[in-house]
Structure formats: structure tokens, C-alpha cells
Image 1 (cartoon, rainbow, N blue to C red):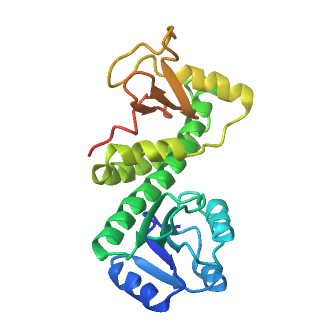
Image 2: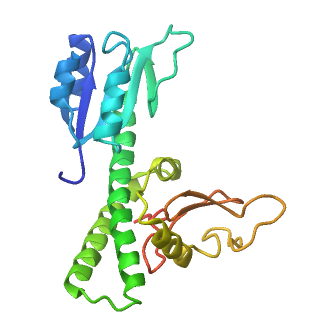
Length: 254
């Protein structure tokens, strides 16, 4: 898979609208799908955004959304529904817009979701790499024996950090928080995970400097969102410190 992912799949029951959306999204590798079979052919792990007509698949987009969640968890879904739909049923969309759809709105939302998708994908890869680094250093007591593999992991982590630095300035803080809260990071073995995460847990909030080592009567000082990801109980700042040097991914601004 090439980074960044830039493919957008448009699932639309109306061919004219599908062609129009594809024209508006000419800056992306856009693919059109009018049927479930065409969606199956068009969708893969390199898709960043799915534009999904609410009536696609006979009004049941569930199978499409299931495929997205299983094959490309980073992919963001933009739902399109009728304005007169008074009480739409629950949908697993990241964002939704109502018809009539206008070019500026569609392009802006796809751009936002594309950034979120790439940030999610890069963070996931970054976490996986830095967790390996952390466990590697912890088990080796700071002196890795397989120096070649260790250097490869360091190089991979650095390249991913550079990708993240490139995307972060184009994102709003709320987009970064949304990604941090949605990302799922696989844990290492239970015993190792507890020891390593405890070792690298920050002692205070990087923004408001609240002490995270103790909890008071007003609730937890920091809420754990995922592996190596915490949110301050005071200011809401999201801190991700997966690498041994305690460098924060979430605050990159270029």
C-alpha cells in the first residue's frame, strides 16, 4: 500500500450524480460504484474515503460498512442522505451530508476525511513500530542485541513521523482528537504490555501540566483511550507517547 492513500470510492445509485461527484473529486483517484458488485471490485485497503448514498444496496448499507471496517479500518465514510428524511436510522458514518450536495461542501468534507484516514493509518503503523521498539529495549535492558533489526525499526518510526509531520498542519485539533479516540491498537502480551506501558506513561499533561500520577476527588487525572494514548481530565489534551523518548505525536504542527 502506498502512502498517503488517496483513493475515493463513490457508491451512488444515480449514475448522473455519481459522474458529477467523480468530476468534482478529480484531484483524487476516484472510483464509481452503482451496485454492490461494483463496490466489491472498486474497494480495497488503499481507499481513504467512501462516499456512500444512504439508499445504496437497496437501502441497507450495512454490508458495505462491514466490508470497510474489516478491510480498511482507516477508511472514513461520508454518508449522503435525503434532506426530507425526518428520522434517519443509525448509520456508522463518520460524517453525513444531505442532498442536494454542492461541490464545495463535498470536496471540503472529503479532504477532511482523507486527512483523518491517512493520520489514522500512519498512527496505527507508528504505534505498531514503537511498541515493538519499546518492548525490544525493555527486554534488552536498553542494549538491543539485534542491532540491525533495531535500526530498521528506528528508521521506520522516523519515516512515519515525517509523514505525520506533513499531514498534521493541514488538520484541525478536533480531527486529531477524533482519530486518537477511534484508533484501535493491538496489545502485546499482557505481562509485557503492562510493564512497558507503565514505564512510558507520562507523569503530567503536556498542555496544562496537571499531575497524572494521582487521582483526586474530581475524577481521574487522565483517561486512557488506547495503548499509549491518554486524555487529560482537566483540559482534554490527547497525549500519545508510544516511543521511548516520550515524543508526542498529537501535538505536531509542522
